[in-house]
Length: 278
Image 1: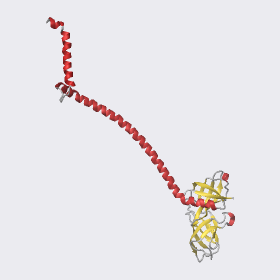
Image 2 (image 1 turned 60 degrees about the vertical axis):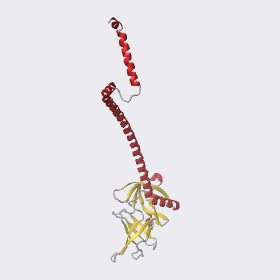
Image 3 (image 1 turned 90 degrees about the vertical axis):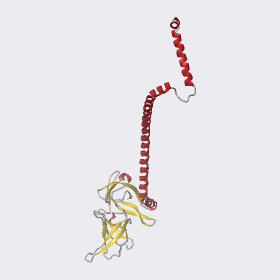
Image 4 (image 1 turned 90 degrees about the horizontal axis):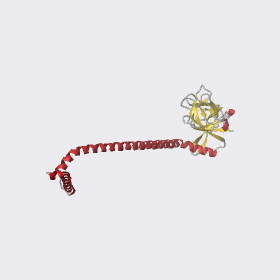
């Protein structure tokens, strides 16, 4: 008993050391199966380990999802920006295609005209479907004066482009001018038939139609005859192309021969004009 009491602490240390050596030896060697103690410990801690693993994995996936959402939003923003840019380019191309015929005629007219032309764009118009009265972006500082004739480039035959009459300037500001077109019901223009040289007067109407009469009731005019401005009265520049006769009306009780005319200019689609200046 004296021996045990005297060497009790040493015996405990030695016992623990022996147990540890046995455990290390068992766990360090290649084994096919776990010990009973390891199985018990594994069964106790496995659910806990699984729980914490799932929580950790879930948190990691959550922050990864947030990062992915941020990336997707940025990519979506970039794609929307590209789509808007492509749509704008497409609109510009369509606009250019829609204006291609006019631009080609404009180029030909500028190359061949003998008049001093000032290019102007439409900035406003009176209510309605027709450009019977409208405003342009050029005025007195650009050399435009009241009474100047306003035209557009018109192809009257294949590869033949001429000044197609639109109207005349009725009011001028420093950087703007108002135009009264030939389809306005208060406007009159004297004309000459190219084929027969017969003359007459045309007037506009509230529905955008142009009609008039010939000075000679026996004039030999017909549907398809082309008209130009005669220059009588000095209101419009002479020899501007007006359009074609679409109908000839002769009533027995009426001493005048009446005509209906289709203007060469499309008065629903004017966006740019030329002003003839002195």
